[in-house]
Image (cartoon, rainbow, N blue to C red; front, side):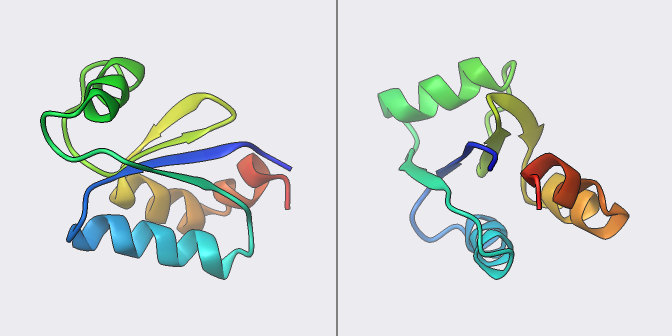
Length: 85
């Protein structure tokens, strides 16, 4: 099973959409609360190569982007491969 990490911010609708998709896939993931100005947000920015938006999603330590990127991977069938399902 893939290691999934998602950096989120409270009240973010895109974060919620991404989480709902991962939950629908029935995969375990680690949600990291990363509001603006926190060390967790800085970590997300550094790990993603400078992207400042949330969510930032990592699968097996590889940055895959945000909610739209996750949805596109799901639509193409690539997400299932990355998740190992």
